[in-house]
Image 1: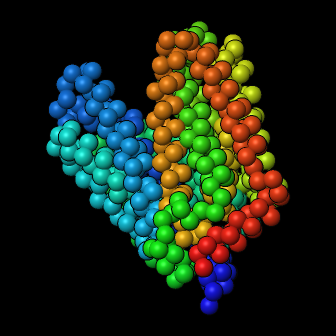
Image 2 (image 1 turned 90 degrees about the horizontal axis):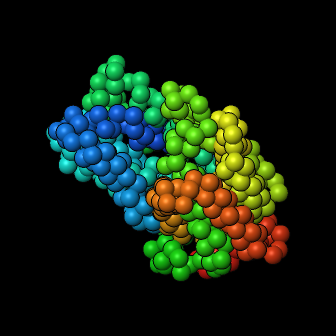
Image 3 (image 1 turned 45 degrees about the vertical axis):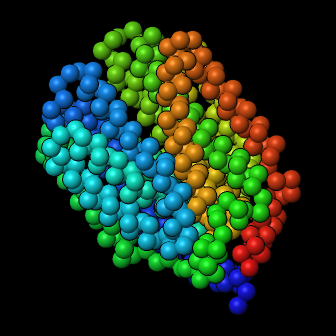
Length: 424
């Protein structure tokens, strides 16, 4: 049977289970992200408990331990994606959830800060459940529903980032820091069981053979859209994170009551995440209807325009509203990015390239706070807002310029046909 027919059979069969796969991946992604982020409120306290006494050293080790996970994840995401192309995406989710269960449980038994750091690195190397879920959902969901499904999954991931620190602030006083890590490990173990028992992945022998025979990047017929989405993913995370280091200081300038600064800063940070959670599935559904490229270009442009008044706010409620609206504008970008990549590459390379996309997003996540803090400290905080606005507007214009000149449906079909022909 020709490869194109095998792919068609795979897509048709996969659509039988795609809703159940989406549900399990959504719950598993939410659970693992909560477990990865719940240590934020008490990480410095745990570092101190592990024997670090100097205040500067506590801050330094806390930053290193937290960032180690994302650095390691950025390095191995393309590798796990390629192995998923060859051996199956479900297997990668089972591996990630089991590895994270062991690593996070062991964090509660760490004897010194070096062991904590090693385990944080191991979480990044062995993890990747949420990015693997993106690959599974993107490849197992019918094409016409892919952006909506990825939007729903993005909601779960962003909700995990929002809920994790809240749980991390509540549990340690009740069950202790070490008990909190063990509880998080038990929670991920349940996600491991659900993944192993409930997810049904339809595999294509042709895809496996093609993945082994060719490298991921070389098999892409038209690399332009993929390059644009890698840049957009990095830009999205950069825009989200560039403001983070200066928010508390910026809020202190517009809030007269010093005792309210921390609370208002938390609301400002949460507003963007809440806006993204509420809009992701809706923008994904819109993209399925009108095309991904208009949504990507429009979202970047709207977010860029919303950053400009943020540089000139005079009260905290103005900043909260603007951050919420900006989050709502950017909420549909991650599912659209994944959907464009999925439609632009052969099935045999989807995991590799989506893994590369995750790495590019981590680059933006690391670069955003570094550059935002540097510009805010040396040039001024308004420059951070305005500079990020310029980058988003330029990104929106770039996405519009490089979009396929034919209709997106036709372009996507042509791209997939070319990819299938290449696999054949």
